[in-house]
Every structure is written in structure tokens, then in C-alpha cells.
Figure 1 (cartoon, rainbow, N blue to C red):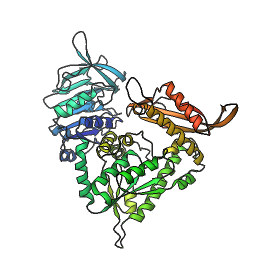
Figure 2 (figure 1 turned 90 degrees about the horizontal axis):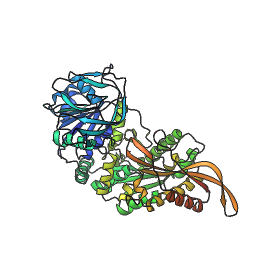
Figure 3 (figure 1 turned 60 degrees about the horizontal axis):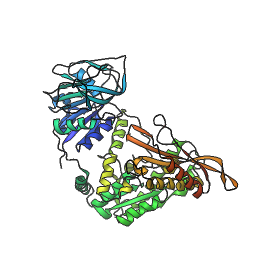
Figure 4 (figure 1 turned 180 degrees about the vertical axis):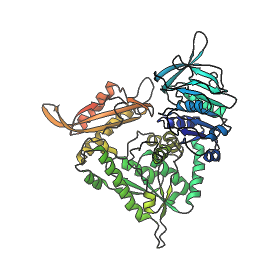
Amino acid sequence: MQHDKILILDFGSQVTQLIARRVREAQVYCEIHPNDVSDEFIRSFAPKGIILSGSHASTYEDHQLRAPQAVWDAGVPVLGICYGMQTMAVQLGGEVSWSDTREFGYAEVRAHGHTALLKDIQDFATPEGHGMLKVWMSHGDKVTALPPGFKLMASTPSCPIAGMANEDKGYYAVQFHPEVTHTLQGQAMLTRFVREIAGCRGDWIMGDYIAEAVQKIREQVGDEEVILGLSGGVDSSVAAALIHRAIGDQLTCVFVDHGLLRLNEGDMVMDMFEGKLHAKVIRVDASALFLGQLAGVTDPERKRKIIGGLFVDVFKAEAEKLKASGQGHKGATFLAQGTIYPDVVESGGTKTKKATTIKSHHNVGGLPEQLGLKLLEPLRELFKDEVRELGVALGLPPEMVYRHPFPGPGLGVRILGEVKKEYADLLRRADAIFIEELRNFKDEATGKTWYDLTSQAFTVFLPVKSVGVMGDGRTYDYVVALRAVQTSDFMTADWAELPYSLLKKVSGRIINEVRGINRVTYDVSSKPPATIEWE
């Protein structure tokens, strides 16, 4: 099926991915590409509309952060956001100036001119009847002269040109960020641009996508065999379910159990894939190997690298056994990975030196070449929320697909300092009690459980001992910290204000039921500056 497409050109902003997420939420397919793609690429991509992202840069610096000429020649609507507005202004004959007043955070913007983009979209009206928008700003420079043919679309007292439009050409631009959740009508604006102004059909729907993806996999694989490294995470699980739906027994999954999973997680993975989906799964118990290699290592980045490297080594050894040989053995010729779209964007950005390298623990880049296998990445066009939607549509249980993310290094980075089996066993049990009680505890205001109200929750092992009292005796045992996080988008996270009664129940159960833990703390570090992960 040929989808209507939006092209997003990335000028280096960390929120570019969020633009794409919002476009996808409007059920329109889009892709992010660096701003310096060729004119030929834009023509062959054939977008129905183009969005220019934000950037950390200034338009008057000596650099290449400009939109290609083909953007203006394509004859399709263009939306500039923040820096995207500034480069649109400069390239089309307007002016951008340095400002000694930077704007970062909440702003109220007045809409002007009744443009197609903002018509009837507002948060409130002033007594004079002006439509106002509550938005999020993040900029230093600003447009100080409109390009020829443009009219004013929005303003604030400190940013007189906060939006501009040339409706004859379908060009619109805003100085604020409609992609972040702080801009309350941002989704409505982006949906208006892609669905109405650019005229895209809303044909990007996960339930319908299964048939399309299955067909693609069958065409790519034919009658050959595939191996997949199953980590137990959401991405590899959904990839396995999708590939299995397409080719059945031509798929073999290798599940590397590194001994750092949550309680019973390995059994759950096996039960789901072997028991319910009837997929071929090889479970490799490598816990002794991983714990042996981690002995004495305290640095978190070293731990990550060891876990990621060993995962690849173990998988490689298993894959070699399953690979097709020249002796007529019809084995696997494809390696499947659960790569999702943010991984693709970030690794692409890294190659072009326009993104910082992500700390990936399971990125098996290079493995296909090392093993002499072809690569199959059936999720590479999808964001995480789409992967989850697809997983449920494929019949995976929602509690498996929507469970809190846990990184590939698992308990390895939830144990501060050296990883020991004793610590991992204690932490696993404490963590399971925390998760169980989050699932049990309902918030009366929303009717949801606290597990559903948090985006991440886990327990951290602190290798220090504290005195506790049990009856008439004193004990001297370890401490764990609980962490629960709520997110509104991938930029905005904070600690969850869990009810005291819930924390009381969890701590009581952990201290009573897990012999070896004496004290439970609750982590109230905000993000930023504290990261989501403890290390």
C-alpha cells in the first residue's frame, strides 16, 4: 500500500522525534531525514507536505543548516517550527536577528490573520476577543522582518513575529513548539497541517499494518530461515510475534538469559513464545558467564559494555550453530532485529555526525556482516507506542506489551557497584513486591492502578548495610531504593508522588518477606537533573 507521506527535515533539535510522533498520532506516515538531503531525494520521496524542525544553531552562523531548494520547488505545503521558521524567513527574503532576551518556557501567543493553520484553534480569548494559545517557547534569535508575500500569523509582546504564513504557497511557520505537550493545542495544529492543509489520508493504522508488514517479510525472506535474538523486551517480542505470523517455523528465536532479568521474566518469555505462539525458541542459560565476567566491576558504563558484548558473543555462538552451511545444511540466512525508528534516526544521525551516540546495550550493529547473514528489521519504521499497538493487534497480552521498560542490562544497572548473585536475588524479590503492589493499588481519582499511572518503576540495590529491629533483636542488612517515574513526553519526566499508604505497604512487605533487606527508601530526585536510570 502506498501511504501519503510527510517529510520532516531535521536541523539538529532533540525534539524532532516528537514532531514525528505527533504526525503519526494523526495517523499519517512520516520520516525524519537530515536537512542536507539532495533535491533528488526530496523529489523521489514525493511528500505531500514538509516540516522543518528546530535547531540549536543560529541562521547567521556560517553553516549548512538550510532547507534544500527542492523544498520550495516541490509545490507542497511547508511548516517551519522554531529554527525551521527562521531558516524559512532567511531563505525566502526575510530577516532574523539576535536577541538579548531569550525565551524558554511558557508563553501566551496571540493568533492573527485567521489563517487556515490556526482558524478556530485557541485556548482562551481576551476581553477584546483575541484568540490566545498557551505554548512552549525555546529560542534566542527571532524573525524581525517578514519575507515578501507573508503575513503575520501570531505574536507575543517580546516576539512580535511568533508566526507567519504565505497562504498562496501553503507556507506556515511558528516560533513556538507545537510538538511538545506543553503547547496545549499542538496536536490540533500538527493534525490540521498534515490532514487538512497537506491533504494526507489518515491511513497509518497498526491493525491494518499487520497485513502490509507480513507481506513485506514474506517477499524479503521467501523460503529462507531467520534467527532472532529475543531479549524479552517489548521490541524483540513484537518483532518475533510479527515474523512468526509471517513465516511460522522458518523463524528460530534465541533467548539469552543473562541472569539479570526480573523475577520469572525468563519463564514468562518462554511461556508466551513457545507455549502460546508455538514459536521455536532456544533458551540459553548464560547467567554464570555474565556474573563471572561482571565480578569486581563497579563502573556502570563498563558493566553495560560487558553485558552488551557478552550478549552478542553468546548469540553469535548460537547463531553459528543455526546458520546455513555449505554442506547442504539449510539453516538461517537472515538475522532479525527489533530495531525501531528512533534507533534508525539516532544511528543515522551518528553516521552523519549530527547526533550524539546513544548508549545502546543490545545494538547488534555489525553482527549481520560478522555472521555473513542478511538483515531483517520489520519494526524499523515504528515508534515505541506504535510497536505496542502492533503487539496487542498481533495478540500479545497487553500487560506484556505495556509493561514498564527494563533495559537489556537489566538488574546489572539496578545494582550499584559490583554485581553479585546474592544482590541480584535479593533485588529481584524486592522489585517483584514493588511491581505487584503498584498493580494492586488503585488511584481513586482516575480509577487506574499506580502501575498504569507510572511509566517506569523499579527497585535499586544499594550495597550498604543498615541496622533494623526485628522483635527484640537487631539485624544488620542491605538497603533498597524504590524509583517510580511519570512522563508526559520523552522530554518531561518526574518522580511519581506515590501515596504514603502504598509506600508503607511495599516497604513493610519487602522488609518482612525478603530476608537480607532491612531498609527501603523512596527516590524523589527530579529529572532533570537526575536521570531516570540509577547508575
